[in-house]
Every structure is written in C-alpha cells, then in structure tokens.
Image (cartoon, rainbow, N blue to C red; front, side, top):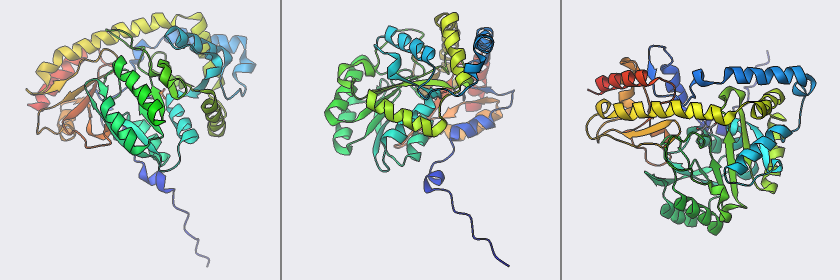
Length: 395
Ligand code: PMP
C-alpha cells in the first residue's frame, strides 16, 4: 500500500510570528462579570447606529448595482475626496489621488511591508510598540530594532544614533495618543524625526488612528506635514475609532511611487475594500455630521479617562506611576519595583477585573511592572468599581 508523503510544513515565518498575547488575554476576560480595562475597543453604545443604518439604506436604495459590484482598487471616489478634504482641513494639503482606501489601517501596514521590505531589512519601532504592527513586520522577515522612549514618546537623540548605526528602511510610530502608552510626541521631536529620516534616508510610517480623540491640549501637526518628510512620510488613518471598526475602513496617504506599489500590493491582497462599506461611509460623510459625532465620543471618553485618573491613586500600590494622556484610549502605568504585572493579572481576573500587562509590547528589554489600562468601554461608575477591585487584587 502506498504511504502518503507528509504534507509540506507551513512557512518558517508562519511559525516564527506568534498569536498576540493581548488577544489571548481578551479571550480570558470575556466573562460579562469582568470589568475589563484590557481591550482597545471603542464604546459600542456610542456607535451612531441610526446614522450608519440610514447611510447603508440610501446606498442600497439609490445605487445598489454600483454598491454591490466590484470596484477600483484605489477606492470610492466620494470617500477619497471626503478624506482628502478632512486631511487638508487638519493641516496637510491632500488630494483624492494621494490616497488609497484600505481594509482598516491594519491592511495599510501589510501593504507597506509588501511594497517596501526585503527579508532582513531593519525596521525601527518605538519601544513599547503597537503589537499587530510587530506581527506584520515579523511576517515580512524584517529585523526589528527598538528605539527607546520616555514620557514624551520616541527619544530623537537615540533615534539619530540608532539610525546612523542600523541603516533602517523605515521607522514605524504612533505619534499621537500611542498604543499602548497614550503618549503624544511633541512638535519639536516630530521635526527631529522628519530631519533624521531625511538625513539617514528612511521611510516614516506615521500611524494615526487616535488623533481625533483629543480631550485637552492643542492639536500637534502630523510628521507628514513637516517639509523635510514630504517625500518619505506615509500617513495611515482609520474610521475604526471615530465611526465603527466593523466597517474595516482605513486609508493610506503616500508619495506617488510608493502609493502605486501599495495599490498593486492591494490588488493581489483583496482587489479592493468592500464597495458597499466605502459607499456607506461616503454617504455618511456627506449627509451626517461626523465631527458632531466625534464630539460626542470625545466628551464621553474624557469623562471616562478622568474617572480612571481619579481612581488610580487608590487602586495601585504606593510608589506606582502613571501618565495623563491628553486623548486616545489608554493610560500607561508602572507598578513599584518588584511587582510583575503579568503574574498579577491572574489575581486581578479572580477579582473580576482585567488589564493588559505591558511586557508583550516591548521589542527590547520588557518592563515587567508596566500595564496598559483602557478607559473607553465602561461608564465612570464601572471604572470606579473596576479600580476598587484592582485595589483588592493588589492588596
Ligand atoms: N494602528 C494602531 C496603533 C492601532 O491601535 C490599531 C487598532 N487598535 C490599528 C492600527 C488597526 O486599526 P484598524 O485596522 O481597525 O484601522
């Protein structure tokens, strides 16, 4: 009898890149009794369900054949124009032709790695960094090099030295209300990053899904708007945090030649982002007031952030530190020396409260005392209760 030959193994990169530990923690904390600060989700009760439903209704009533058909890879003209106008209004002159619609900004990361990275290329990342970006660069076979950060984000002096030594292909960063730290890079550092990129010849990938969620302080201009970065900055945006993540709509703004390569990469990946979802978003941007909706989200999240900041002094052991983010979804905290946030998570979950340990977000030496606390999905009262449970867990 013929013995079947073994099936070929999966590619080495598929083994090398691990499942996100954060996703596994989220699965652990899915019980409804748990007050969880672990997620990075927008608050579902704030989705503009009525406005979104009416946008889909209009699309299906007025242009069903177009909305249900294949469409161009670059994306819906009306949606790209509306995004271009919003981007221009926020200080970065942009035309529809500068933009590619992506299936969430996560896909933009995949397209960029396909278009730019050879195996072994050096990618500089903030330390700590957004996890799914690390996975994405890992699949491309990139060599990840961490750049140290402080309370104001990426350290430009360290960047200069590392860039001179490592000859990176690109720097990936989330300069505004970063995931996981909530930090915002000040303007002078943004200019320094742009100048370092021009001096050392690397791309800047500026990922900005949280920028519109500002609760206080002043808007800081995008790195992409610093003249030194004009020919080498890629800006990623997303509707996930201001409209609805389930629509999977993001965009990529890049210089022409790179944009072209990303369009070809996207043809191979998924032909185009869902026609009907793009059309509905375009209707929404035309007929509803997204800015008014964002103001509603901001007001709610500001209250929730404040509830968290108010409760933290009682919740965490003496000697803990945490920041005060001016926007976004996350507070970044450090327990006192000797505490291990990963080990304590089990105790916290027994007390029906959860957070994400900070260690997995590091490419360099992890800080075992760090933790990420999301404040968006619970009311101020629930946040206060969650923090009381955390205090008990840490006793
Ligand atoms: N970048 C960052 C920094 C994020 O935190 C997220 C989602 N949490 C994404 C990109 C992906 O967002 P989406 O694909 O939903 O646009």
